[in-house]
Image (cartoon, rainbow, N blue to C red; front, side, top):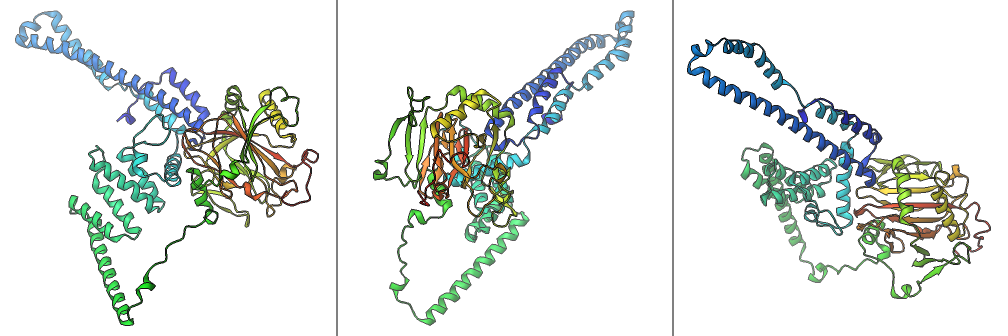
Length: 568
């Protein structure tokens, strides 16, 4: 009901509008950090709504007082009309009331106290999340459901690991997810969420939706998955509630016809087999399925397993060769008296983690500098070598195919990033120098510090940081050669999900605020280390901030001498 109210535009609305200008043209879904601004916007809208309610209540109170006064006056006058009007003052006041005061009352009743609220809301809607944001957030939930093997009820009841603020989903929320899946011809998720909506309706949850609408989607999505028996059962339930539902009546006949046809085909097949003679029972026995070795699983499966904390290929023997130490990088003057804590995370590829390597003050400063300029994450075009936007939108995102150069569908990166230079703030320069001191590598040819904030279900699917042989122009515009190494700061803890995983070797590195991980992407020979293919798992619960430094080949000639062995 609040959408058609209007009231006068107070001055504070102008202040609110000016604050919202910074939100313009943002795609909120891809960055949790920027979505926090929406909470403050909504808080201001609630304040605006309460101001409108107060104005309406004041107006009604004035009308009520007027009506009470006139009711008392009329009750007295009606007892002796002629005697009452015989008093000249009463006669004058009657004329005045009917000629002037009732007109004033009419103006008061007709006065619109909603102008400001509606104007404010209408203007602000330009800066609200779009349908695409809502759809993106919904698809992120579906992606999280698949990656972490969550059932619909777990998500609907908000029973997720590490949650601080539990939130329940309504029937309408579940229905909306089912509809978005349906519009993508994703009948698997349509069934899951329509079934959850039906379950909550049957449990007595109040809703503007009815079971008939939900059952209509549910039965059809089940039919599309080839389960005609179940589709028929749900269609019968629908017709019990609405016997005149035309589509359901048609579907009922069609499903019954299809089942009868299947039955007849099965009988014909059985008869044919009988005529050919019975086969040996031992031939009919299915051989037990062998468990597929982990290294033979599809990459997507290995990636999702590692995200769930499964499939880690660290053995006790390998673990025994990993150590932690105080590290000063060959007596670097900066760290001789105060070496840093370093621990081995993995052996091949060799990944190390530096503990307590970034202070809270530094992390807050980096976030503060990055947040106003967060944009969709960029990737290097493998054909041209130019850094380009990596669209985050699921299913409709496009990137360049490394083989054809044509735009193709991609959905592998859901984050926003910003680039910070050492010239902008002395703290960035200090951080860059720290990386150089600890790695021994030249930073002048490295890329700027990239800060990334992951959005709802934020992820970065398996990829290489370095340019492969079939991408000769990768990073061409930089003129600094290939990416020799990666340094990754974790600037937040993540309640659930968000690991950095290496599917080919079965490694998983979990976010730990204030730490950084480092690995070489190239062997000393300059050849790419394909075992460094890695991914950022979807953030299940929490807000993930990272910053990374991609270090390039040029300038490292004397710092990391070449090797004649291709893989050493």
